[in-house]
Image (tube, rainbow, N blue to C red; front, side, top):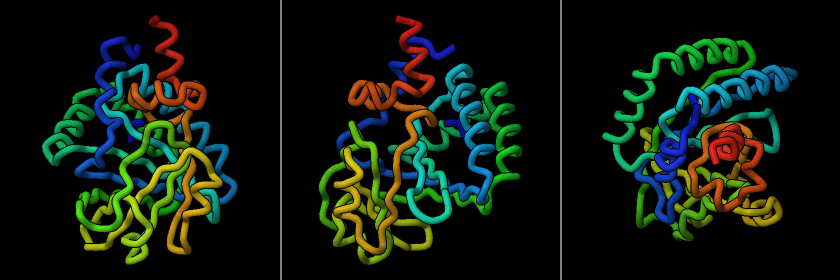
Length: 220
């Protein structure tokens, strides 16, 4: 999956950073085989650069687990099923990008375990809402099961009916302090994925390692 950018594209990818949770949240989880972290990183860094050069159509966030087997999670945000399908069509119509993604996806498959790809729906009214504060965030906690209702943050429902909640934090200390036993703590990987313009503006130093930020400086 994705993760020449022009001034126009920089404006286009500003639509996802928001105060309200997205209606749909796609999470892809890629567990990395022990000892294959460097190989995975090389492939994904190549993909990140290609996504900028070949105009990836949609912002997304890369995250990594901090405990246990290393996993890379990918967050994609959508306001409707119609938008999700349109983004899918936009990917499919970009043949050069799809060729890179297919090739690098096959390469990554040699270094990862079973990949999961789940689209969940936002459930307003459940849990103790504390907002969707992605801007400036560097860490995320995802809480599963009944504990998600008490943990605070927006609640999402998977197709299986399982619930999970998400909260964003600027520091690891804050994330760990509020992470319960049912939570997974994740760190955002700024060098991968495709940040929206607001994410860049909210934390320029953090996102400076992303190819989007580099391209932005060149087109100024």
